[in-house]
Length: 187
Image (cartoon, rainbow, N blue to C red; front, side, top):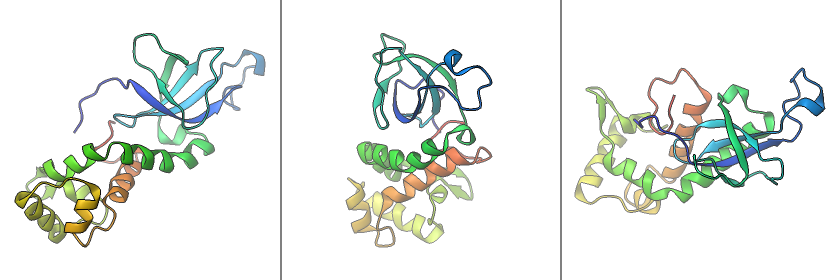
């Protein structure tokens, strides 16, 4: 499980130049809002862009403490239910993009995952992995660590797309705030 730390980079899910439509203030008093997802811990965030910034969907923006390029400040952390319909629609595609870009990190999950309780292994948290498949993964990684998603799918025939399992788990952790174990996201 990941320790709580600040996101440094995020990817844009939606841009609301006139703020939220349910904001009771007059349009001219609303501040623009950018809904984004952090690239490390998949935190869902609302950002306030700089007045001169041009921000589009899928843009990567720096939100660390130092001089930010397009973002004035991080307004707040939000839950999945607070995302706009556009952001919810884009989220699976953006998660897929991030998982592909961070393939090495997620392959390491298959190589280094451990038991959570005597009866529950981290691998069980991935959709479609039961005891038999878990043991096959553990035996295969003990012979030789996995090197890529392609290597996992070549050696474990029952897993043709390991990246899709990771993506589904990340989405589940974001959508369901009552998920007990957060492997890839933080509560």
